[in-house]
Length: 354
Ligand code: IPM
Ligand code: MN
Image (cartoon, rainbow, N blue to C red; front, side, top):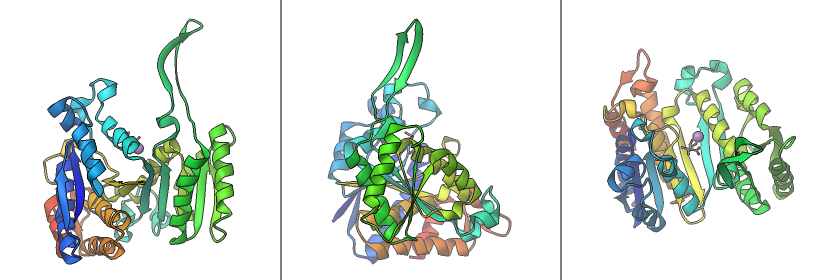
């Protein structure tokens, strides 16, 4: 038996995780995986219920699960709560407590949706890259000061620390991912300015000696941001720090023009965590129109990375390709000549094609 911890969170979280569970249940039957699901609260839902965004029981459940399927957290309702209990703290808390050191964000343009991209279709058609973002270190978790008075003026500061083992661990995963892809790693840093970036660049270069068949390229983050918009097809695997990865992965998501379709995995040593990259979309919550595909493809990543079942993962990805080819679209990706469906109808259609 494999226990999947499901954390719907807030906003559309409930609908999209339910949709993914419907599909996973079908895959479980077909591939005899014996999956079970256990639901827990986090984010605003948890603030309302117990006063904190990440209750101990939820974290404990994550520790005992085989994998975590997450919806989204946050919403206007909790915008003004104390910073120490913001819904986002649930995410950061799970990442840190579970040691989810690598955030994988595949950026793949679906052929039939290439025209949805705000970039020129010929630039984006065929884009297929993965961003490997360090997730439990760097400036996100360094020492900081919210406010202090120095020389009579108020100031604040954050610090970024990276150690060689932290850089090696994430880069190793990037090189390994490249092995089964187009064998190119682009490491992104700001080595012309930052000490952490210089150590990053040196460490990645040393490690690359173990991967002689992989081409390694280094880009400064400002240039990388530009290259993503100018010529996104040049990228295969991008590896970068927590902060740079946060920014670049949002930019990269726009290339596809269909953020509702984008999955992610956060890989840890003990367990891993899967979520769509879009947020909780409170404005459409409960209307049954959210696109469940980002979550369903995250479930496919769960099967691939946590359950090591490549065929089960592919069965979901192929089913998604089929529903798109059949013209089914949730409102966010709808165009004339296609068929508009609800969250549930989309999930059902994917399930039926497995
Ligand atoms: C993300 C989000 C989070 C981050 C926030 C919600 C803490 O933007 O997963 O990219 O900054 O890492
Ligand atoms: Mn982000």
